[in-house]
Amino acid sequence: RKEVEQDPGPFNVPEGATVAFNCTYSNSASQSFFWYRQDCRKEPKLLMSVYSSGNEDGRFTAQLNRASQYISLLIRDSKLSDSATYLCVAQPQNAGKSTFGDGTTLTVKP
Amino acid sequence: EPEVTQTPSHQVTQMGQEVILRCVPISNHLYFYWYRQILGQKVEFLVSFYNNEISEKSEIFDDQFSVERPDGSNFTLKIRSTKLEDSAMYFCASSVNSADQETQYFGPGTRLLVL
Image (cartoon, rainbow over all chains, first blue to last red; front, side):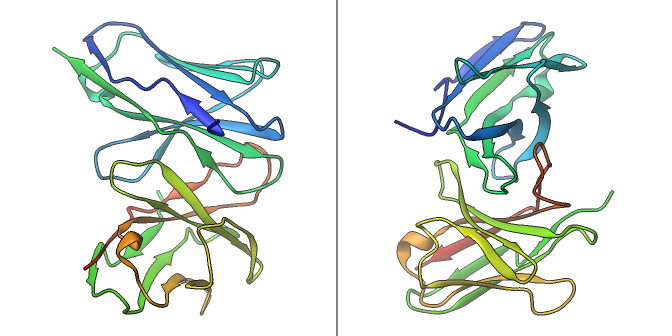
């Protein structure tokens, strides 16, 4: 089983749509979670950290369920510029090693 | 805004040659990392580095790989004898510390092609 598993995608949605990505992690020692976005042939860039209480940043909402070892990302009112690959990332406590999921590709169409 | 920088952006080498990939982490960061991403695959952790020593490494990071902080600003990844399967994008990252929810900032990557 993969350590971090994401929806395989791809997701093709119209502008303005709401889209949700799911991610599960298998290592119960994981303590910190992030969503990164990666544009084609570019470096991963932090989109948002994921906190136990859930957190929101504009159109983006992240949720964490530690009991189910599940993380989600919701994008509301999607824009063309949201087209990218979204990477779910888990880290163990106080450790730098980040484990990435395979990524879920989103294409937002006019 | 401070950034992680990497050089070169592209490197082509012959199998069996040594390559050195260079990174300049963000200046007040203390933790440094190397990741790689083979084309079409996921980002994979290679090694983390703190206080002039390796703090963690993956099974990918075998004896052919080494890291060094030769001075106060550079962080390098050396591949001693490159193989075809080393062809990938190599990302350097840095963070202030390794605390929970500490963000790692990634450089733009070096695309390595081994022929």
